Length: 392
Image (cartoon, rainbow, N blue to C red; front, side):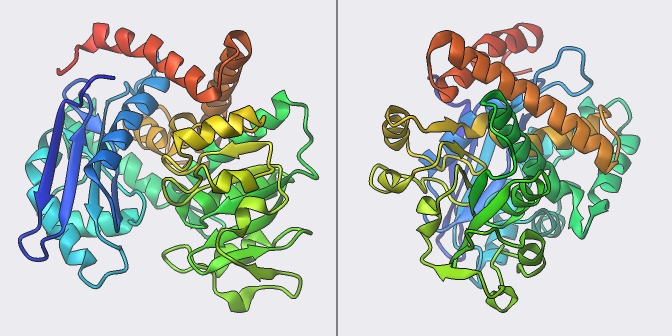
């Protein structure tokens, strides 16, 4: 594994807290990757996420598409997003990173931050947009920016299209895996850790596809119902951080400890919250057949080895949760318009093709899905580098 192109640590002059930026690679002079905020965030974590973004971009390379994948990058801030100092810290971080955002780093929401919050802080920091570095690559910047703004204004049953795009991709990954295994949707049970942007949207799409969401976890604990939860009611009862108001629970819903989702009696687990949620100790409690990584880095490598030995398939984050990032660029570059039906159809088609390609390689090579995904990236990165170079 090669070292990242650029890695920096920033120290806030007001609070002493640290922030990080890692640019793994540039393509056409630009790198893409979100900004996360969480207590305990480290440079090593951000570097791994930046490498993951390089992989996600490469996996969506289509030489015929208007969207040409960018390089990979990631930002991180070591702070609890609920801390009273968090917003001011975010503004100062973006102000410090302004030269990079204006020149080559396109960013957006990630763990702990919403897009609305990032946009508001970016404006306060003096930025025109958190994706302005990509504007020189657009054929018609004004039309492209309007298209993306229009897409962000679209709502589907009370939830913004931008929040639903990633979950649509995660759900389609689940459905593709079930289809390859000839497992019917009705009767298949799902447990989701995290009911924020990614977890909430994933739960909605899976429930509407006929699966039974039997457990969801948030910072207050796990809500479970073996007969199936009312996903729409839980989504309506969330706060901005994905925490469910317990007064909205039905009589059959049970409140359990926070880690109860791991052993909730589900065939599919969707970790959609924090990194490193599944380790060598708690993986022993998992009886699911599939773990579908909606979050970034939710399964530790050592745990994944133990799970694979037990016959549990982990569908990796670099494929599963890549739909959000791709949707931004498909929209901005004009591969799709600001329309929910068109967006969902494109996401489903692209994600299913990727999952099928990855699982076909698993079967052919006798390897794990993550190894197969890495092999696909290894095939595609030289093609991108030959066409565009490493830095330009």
